[in-house]
Length: 163
Image 1: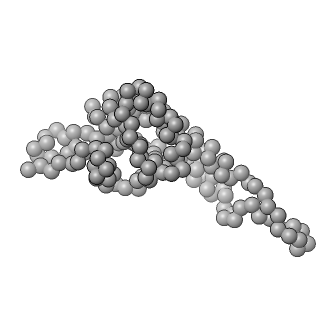
Image 2: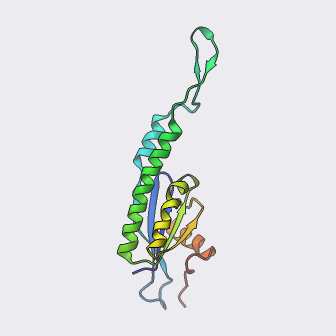
Image 3: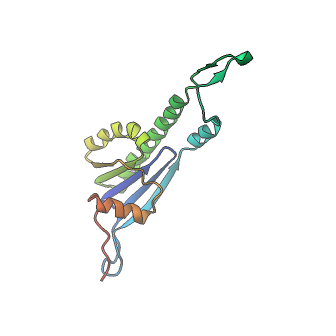
């Protein structure tokens, strides 16, 4: 059993950690951030490849006429892919929080994913979880660096060194 579930999310990936106490605190440094699962959003990378034209909304008229604009709805499509991924992340978060019997859930999210994840967090607080939001994309950090960052911000206990 752990007190903390840490979820780190961006538009393409989600990583789930728990903060686990060590077996022998006098000999080992702890608590430790333990990786549980990782979810990927393959549709985002597929969509990024589908949109190869970096300059959207422009087309030329025939016979050297003026340039006209059009909307390819790429932003709406990408937002829908992010929203669907956020639903999967939230469902997995609830399942893991219940299975590990955690009391605190910490969600660190990239700017674009926040608007899809934050509204659902209210449901977790109603279920008795203490929820903390971190508005920073820290998905590429190692578990040790994630632990250090969260400890510096007072969200998790610092790792104690033996001795």
